[in-house]
Length: 395
Image (cartoon, rainbow, N blue to C red; front, top):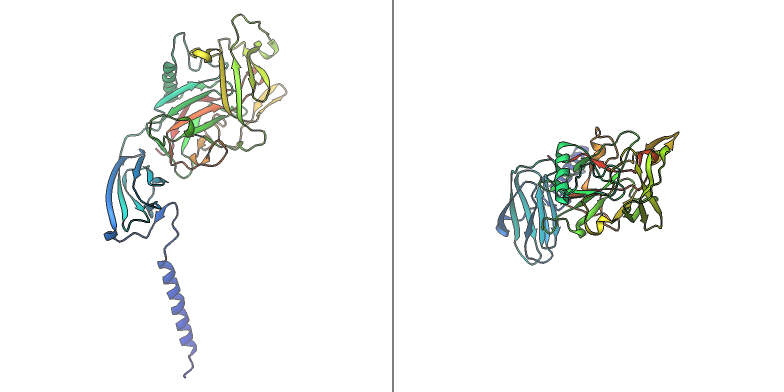
C-alpha cells in the first residue's frame, strides 16, 4: 500500500478539525431560564393567542402531565413564573412574544403568541394603601394631622407628598408606609425600583423594604405574600429577626421629667417594651412639643401600638457631643444621600421569606417601608426613617 504523504496527512487532519468545528456549531446550546431554541415541527403544534398590556401580568393555564413552560430563545423583556399547569407572564415592553407548553401525555406542544399592547404607565407612586407610623417627634406634622382627619385622608396626604417629593416621617421603630404603582414592577436583571429619603453624611436612618406580589390577583397585599428585601445587614449577628415592640400611650396629665441638657421637655414620655425583656422611653423634645401619638388611630391603637419585624444594629455614635449615624453598605431607605440613585435602588431578587430563604418573584405589586431602628440619640431624639418619593426604574 502506498504510504500517505505529509501533504495528505495534513489535509485529512484539517478536514477532521473543520468537521468537528462545524458539528460543534450545530449542537443545541443548554436551555437557560426556561428558554428553548429547538422548536417542534409546525404540524405538531397547537397555536393559541392571548393578549395583555405592558407591565400587566397574565396567568395562562393548560392541562397535561409533567408540564413544562418555555419562552422562545432570544426573547427579552419578558419574565415567566411557571407553576405546575399554569404560568404567569409579564412583559416590560409592548410586542409579540412566544411561550411554549409541553406535557408528557400530549404529542403536540401548545405555542402561545402573547400580544403585549402599549399602555400608559407612570414611574411614580399611584396609591398609598396604609400610612402607619410609630410615635415620633415628626408624627402629626409630616404629614400634618388635624383633629377629625381620618386614616384615608392621611393616606391621601401621603400620596400627594410622594408625588410632590415632600417628606413623610415613619416615626420610631416599626412605623411604616405601604404603597403601589399603577402597574406591576417587573423583576428585571439588576435594580428594579428606587426609594428616596433625606439622608446625608452622618445622618442615616435606615428603613427596611418589604415587597408583595399579588399572586392570587385579588388586588390587595395578603399577609402571606410579603417578603423582606435582605439588605447588607440582614445576616449581621447584631440584627434581630422576629423583633416585637409595644408602645403605650401616656395618660393625660402624667408627670413630666424635663432634661434641658438634652433638649427634652419629658425624657420619659412614651414607654416601650420589647420581646427581649428590654424597656425604655421615647423622649419628647422641646423643639417638637406636639402629641407624638398618631392622632387618627382608633380602637386599641389609640392606647397601645405593637410592631413586629427585623431590628437593625445601632448605627449611632456620640463623638465629642456630636451624634453621627453611619450608613449601612446597601439595601435600605433613608440610608444614603439622594444624589446617589444606585445607593437608593432595590433589586427584587433580594427577597427572602420569613425563614431567610431566597424567593424568586416575577414582579411585585406592593411595597412597604418600615423603620428598622430602635434608637434614641440624645438631643436629636429617636431615629426615624423618612421617605420623599419612589420610582420604577423600568420606565
